Amino acid sequence: MSRSPSLPDRPRLELDPEMSDAERLDAIREHYRRIVGVNEELEQRLAQTRSRREQLREKVDRLKRRNEALKTSALYIASVEELTDDGVIIKQHGNNQEVLTEATPKLEDALEAGDRVGIDDSFGIQTLLDDETDARAQAMEVEESPDVTYDDIGGIDEQIREVKEAVEDPLSHPEIFETVGVEPPSGVLLHGAPGTGKTMLAKAVANETDATFIKMAGSELVRKFIGEGARLVRDLFDLAAEREPAVIFIDEIDAVASKRTDSKTSGDAEVQRTMMQLLSEMDGFDDRGEVRIIAATNRFDMLDEAILRPGRFDRLIEIPKPDEDGRRKILEIHTREMNVDDDVDFADLASKLSDYSGADIESLVTEAGMFAIRDGRTTVERRDFEDAIEKLDHTDDGPDGVVHYQY
Ligand SMILES: Nc1ncnc2c1ncn2[C@@H]1O[C@H](COP(=O)(O)OP(=O)(O)OP(=O)(O)O)[C@@H](O)[C@H]1O
Image 1 (cartoon, rainbow, N blue to C red):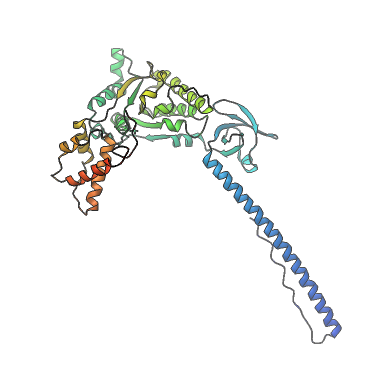
Image 2 (tube, rainbow, N blue to C red):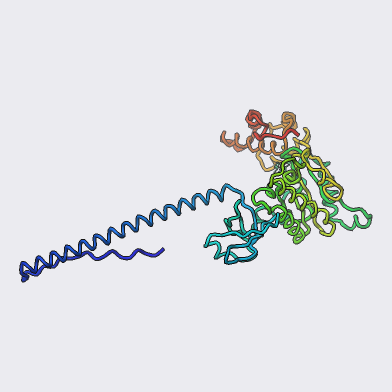
């Protein structure tokens, strides 16, 4: 911002004792004229400053409103096709509609053909997006080799065996499948109540096979940028091919693959497009090398059957809540690092935890530890677990206070 010009000099009255009265009077009159001149100039400056302050205030208000709008409303994604004297030609992702629109002068200077931009409902360019690796990074979680092992998962040994057979063996020993002439399952769908270890299981497979674990939540695919879901699905599969061996894990797949609803909103059409892209990626899956795909859902009843056809998610594995023995194992797993008193009997404790999921048991163990700490002890005792059960059971919606879908 430019600095304001310096203030005018303060006029000085200089009277010489030699001066005649008439000369003095003239000097005083001249001085008065200069004071009036300076005063006028200062008033003018004040008025200019006030008006500038008003302008800045309006600008701040405008920016605040714009900021709010950007924060609250979803933007559509488009690519800049061409910058013309009449405006910017953009092509909207998803429907490929071409539009002549405008950007703010500042954005216009920064735009180049090929850039990805976020546009509002009236196609105004609101923001310039970073390159697509950022969108990928936002939506995907990539772990070179997660540190979860099968030993960290309790109570679902049979399901672990099935996942090993369907995902691990084709990655570790593809030759066996070739020799026998059997196509390994394309995709495995884990379904069951929340917090039962579906994500853990997918991570453990990636660990066991030294594969890159790439997780994408279905809700991310349909969330912020309309027109972006199908592209993210493509990116997901491309990234997996670059990083093979890889395990793709799509959590909450119901968000993109629910049964068709009757409503015809643009959001629904968008979800459909994303699902079609997912199906087409899975159909072309054979050539993708050492990439395996696992999806998970808590809402199996909601899934569109198209996703379950042969060649797609054709191996369904239900991950149940643990039985009593499973709960005991999970208690033991989560207390491995804990200083537990001899008076704690895990088998007895497990018998009191019917309907607890693995995640609920993890919260229970943490809560028991907190009771011991609050009491100034370094050992967790039976009463801490009992207090923790009482505390968690007193939440209305379930052992962990989370509203559970009745599976
Ligand atoms: N079978 C289990 N054995 C040991 N710990 C478990 C088990 N199931 C869940 N947990 C604990 O609960 C946490 C959450 O589990 P996870 O994220 O794998 O569940 P999920 O089935 O994927 O849940 P959601 O459907 O809510 O995504 C895990 O980090 C783990 O600590």
